[in-house]
Amino acid sequence: MKFVLLILLAVGDFSVFLLFVIFGKSEHDITLSQSYIRTVIPFSIAWFTISPLLGAYRFSTIYKFRKSIFKIPIIWIMSGIVAIIIRSFILDRSIVISFVIVSILVQGILLIGWRFIFILITKIFKHNLE
Image (cartoon, rainbow, N blue to C red; front, side):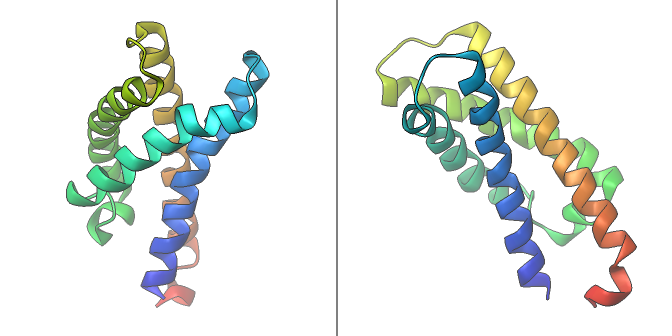
């Protein structure tokens, strides 16, 4: 059951990147496929490479809000910076500070919000998950 919860958590994390693209598409005149390449791919690569190494998927992090609220933002900022660098290489463009601020801030808030919801749900249904 714990493996299923980890998969659900990862799918939710990935959904954060997709949601950011959907928000961004409504603000900018680019196609969804361009958005996936420009945003979802670099942020997913960075997050799913770095975050497990830094403990974002450890049970002690994903089930405890107090630990998660401090750890996830730090991991996210580190992953986000790497994602921005990956993105600049993919697009062969310089880094735009306004995008850095908006992308790290908005996706960070969405990621922390999703993780908070995940923790609440697992606490409510804890007896059914064991």
